[in-house]
Image 1 (tube, rainbow, N blue to C red):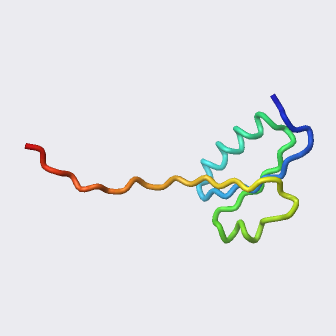
Image 2: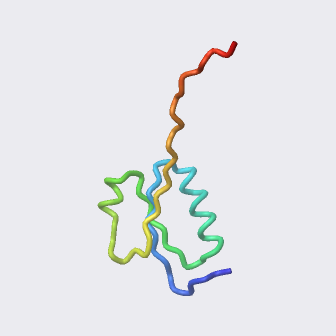
Image 3: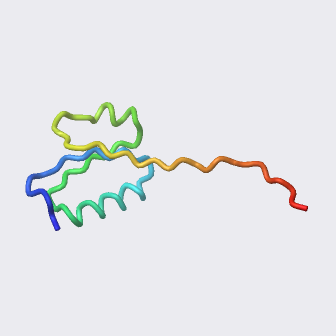
Length: 73
């Protein structure tokens, strides 16, 4: 179901091209009038940021911390 009839302009900040393509496919499936702009870094996003954009999307995955393993007796 499409909620918006007007075009949406979204800046996606994602450094991995494969993840960006998945995001793009998922969003355009629901909203055909979508205009996506990709930035591969925060610095690139600052340059591409526009007042015409409706949303800025960040996709971050933080690595799990390495915890010490305790010996079990």
